[in-house]
Each structure stands twice: as C-alpha cells, then as structure tokens.
Image (tube, rainbow, N blue to C red):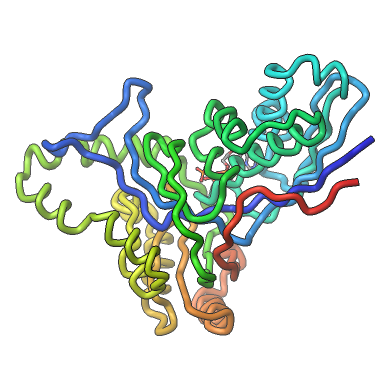
Length: 324
Ligand code: ATP
C-alpha cells in the first residue's frame, strides 16, 4: 500500500490590514468575516505529515503534541472527511486514511499550524487516491474548510484578499532569516482578536475624522509590495504591519515585551506579531545574526516557557518529502 510524507510549512504575516470603508467603518462581509488585505509568507519551520491507506473506510489521526486533538475537531481530520465526501468512489476503491502529524509548529500561535496540516492532507489524499487535482482545485476545496488553507497549498510570498482565500502570488523573495518567539502556555483566540478589533475600532474614523487620514498615510500595502518586488529586506522590515497588534499588544503585555525586546536588538531589521498572535517574529539578514538574536532573547528571558526558533523564508507551500 502506498504512503506519502509531506512537508507542511508554517506562515507569517508580513502585512495584515482589516479593510475599512471610505467612512472608516469596517467592511464586514455578508458571511460575517472581515475584508482583509494580507501578505503571507511561507517559512521553513514545518510539520511533517505521513499519510497512508487503511483497509477500512475510516479516518485515523495521530499526533505527537498533547495540545492537538486527534478527533473530528482536528483540521487534518476535517480535510480527510471533506475528500471522502467529495470523492466517495475513491474512498470505496482505496479505503480510508491514517494521518500521522509530527508537530514542530507551535500550536495556536498565529502561524497557521492547523491550516497547513489540512492543506497537506488534501494534497496527500489527492496523491494516494490518484485524483490528479490541480493546485487551484485543491485551493478551492481548502477554502471551504478555512481561509488560510489555500495559501498553505500555494505557499511562497502571496497577497491574500477577501477573507484571505483570494491569492495573488508575488515574485519569490530571496532568503530572509527570521527569529520567532512564543510563550508555550500563551494562546490568543483569533475570534477574540477580530471581535475586539471590531468593538474598539469599528467606527473610530466616524468619530475622529483625522483618524482616517492618519491611517491612510500610515497603512499602505503598496509600499511593502514594492519593497518585496525590489528584494529589499530593510525596506520590507520597515513596512511590516498588523492591525491586530492594536488589540493584542495592550491585552497581552508579554507579547508587547517580546516585540520591544526584539526591536532593541541592533541586528533586527524589523519585528511584528504574526496573525492574531501570540507569536512575534523578527527579520534579520543572516543566519549568524539570527542565532545571535536568539541568544540575546534567551539571556534576557531565561523562562523555559518561552520558545525561540531560527527559521527563514521559503518559496513553496506543501511539498512531498518522500513516497513509498
Ligand atoms: P491561524 O494562524 O490559521 O489562526 P494558529 O496557528 O493560530 O492558526 P493552530 O495551530 O491552527 O492556530 O491551532 C488553533 C487550534 O486548533 C488549537 O487550539 C488546536 O487545538 C486546534 N487544532 C485543530 N487541528 C489542529 C492541527 N492539525 N494542528 C494544530 N492545532 C489544531
């Protein structure tokens, strides 16, 4: 029986803007989601997903991380269930699937850990069942499960709009080194972050006419897109942006502290929270500098609860490690 091992990379957000209308109200979509403009970047930090056929028509999930459920609430399980529902003949012909997740990406971290596992399962089952689906068909299926899944299939450096599922790829970025910092025990709910943002900033420009002008001047995704196209790490780092920092940093002083500590290191080109947090990342020019920044962070915060990773930008999403 065939089996596949796939690499499922994490992502960071180089840019995250919650779109307002001309009057500063948030543009909420009929489906309840906010309209977003993001720049998503694949990074080398990745989970390994092993997928093989089972003789019974069932789905089984194993994972080495205690915080990750192995039941139907696991996004990887839901991706397999979606494929089974879409392709019942293939399920009958090839049987069910056993999915083993080797977790390296911190959980509930703003790094799309669950989404990238789901994307890997879509691609793995496509291979296992000889479906021959195209990348855009896999992205479309993924979008029905979660907004970040299409990007995880595509990978690289991408502008994502809508609720994050509409993708416009950018030219591949030359390698930039990244240091990630996350408190193991700290989780931020994505739903809480967006809800709080809406409550606090939903209509701020209607009340404060200067706010819109200030926002328009400060927030400008074109500037970072240009910096990416010019392969200019310093300029990219200077234009990092994440609207959700406005609610997460005041509510989570530990995250703010990581951000300030990164910003105080001379090697750091720029720092930002990823997604709805609580992971904070720093961009640096070389691997040596990244290791030095990691050491300085560890010296400043000897707390074992703080996880630190050195990683780098990569140009691909889900990819095959091996098949047997
Ligand atoms: P995003 O950046 O897309 O918001 P995230 O990195 O913040 O995602 P995840 O790591 O995907 O968050 O985890 C969010 C929650 O989803 C966790 O609390 C976890 O229990 C649950 N979960 C379900 N499936 C998975 C999975 N395969 N990997 C990790 N977490 C999962």
